Length: 127
Image (cartoon, rainbow, N blue to C red; front, side, top):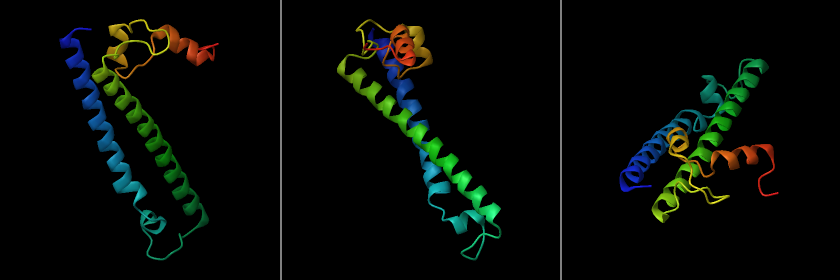
């Protein structure tokens, strides 16, 4: 991978990282910081109806799941930036072959070549 490619992918990863941090900040500010009472818009400590409580709980659970997914993606982006700085970006972590540029364009944080990724998804990687 040449210097121009390295710079291109670093910019993409940083841009994606900033976008994720902004989204995670939204979750923290708007969803996770609100108490159940604030989220329901109710002045009392109790929701108007049990169904409202269930709806509120379901929405919070969805938000936690999305934030968890975003956090995992942030971790993978940070790992990709570390590989970039370490000179191993674009090299499959499983077999050591170069990851195709087309794959990196679609998934810039990819750590596996497409063949190893398929094997991982099938559960046969490392067997």
